[in-house]
Length: 172
Image (cartoon, helix red, strand yellow):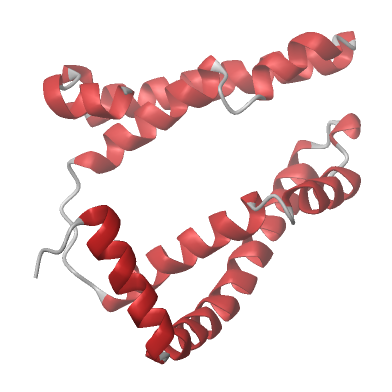
């Protein structure tokens, strides 16, 4: 809904990159400070509110980062398109219900925020993100090959055509 609102009516300050960057830095800093305070105060309930996917911090940062990129003019590039598809693959891999719990359990066991060693934690997170991206970059071409072979099968194409005709309507 929020993306639809932004598309229809816009949010003027999102066009000002200085304001957006400043807000990103401020919100991220407040977010991190609150996490440190919550950790030292051992307040478990509130820490969950701050780090949930639908927290005001995550939503605000998502809108602001979207604002940074929405007016960016990038020429078509095979490299950018490839990494875009790898990014989708990375998202699907680490958010899949079959692998999500295992992945985040491994992450939480290996990244010890309890020490509040910011540099090590940051480096470990960068390594984890890089590994996920590397695995995705390897799996994406394999997925494309398998997908191409599956769609060559006549019964798969016939089934997809029937779905088109029955549910979407025949537009050809």
